[in-house]
Image 1: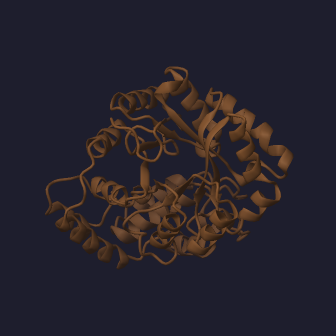
Image 2: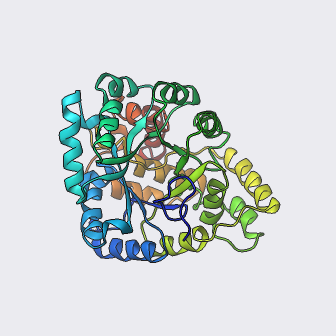
Length: 374
């Protein structure tokens, strides 16, 4: 595997996102994760991405037990993140950072990102000198590269990169469904990265799995091509941009890993026919009235009523999108112990945490209408 042209320590252009690790009985399946990590490294790849909030704080320790304790430090590149809910003042940042190193079982992070930056939380990062602290930690050798992950409009990113020109990399949401979407502004955000000459890490290339679970009409468009998986077209779309240094995928099964490795270890540029097919699929998706939730689960952590919002949205999408009436049954299972859509008290915490800027309170009302008034 050839070194990355932006960062020589990264091998290839495919990264293992550790937000959706395999689970068994509600806990991370260490045996399966170990098998997947081994397959990833055996393929010549080495970039792992995590954050403390992933899997309720257990993603980091899973990486420690399944990766960093089992491989020499030269065999992997590790990214972690600073999330706003884990610090309230400048003095909180270094102790939290130290714990992250301990949880991950490393002495330094290759990349450390200011997490989920947007207009809402950016003032907190500035007030608490989070960026300045990260640059200090880099000078001390405890971080190799400082970057950001970003979830907002292009003008906000332009302001951040202007304020902090030493940022080395930007992680953005980029997929064919969101590229021209005015609520996400993927194209405009990518162009801001180009303007500031920043390499791009891509997250959500398959939009939380939505670009794998396509409606039949969209499936038929891709099925007329050369037999690639639905995920493969989404991954190759994201990798086709000149400033993209790596594409992350949050994989939950070995099957997903193997499929993605078959595509991303030898990336082929999209053909004209494939680009035309993607445009057709985008048109089909725009005609669907579904909730564009990526199941990042940031909304769940602070919900006072314990509503599993992404799971309810998934049920709703399946019912409305695929006319799958079995979703009534699954909705009852998910909400058997509470957390029904109608339990929402409209406090707004979920909307403040949502990277997609969804009107979650109103959407939960629609979910309640669909499932609870039978």
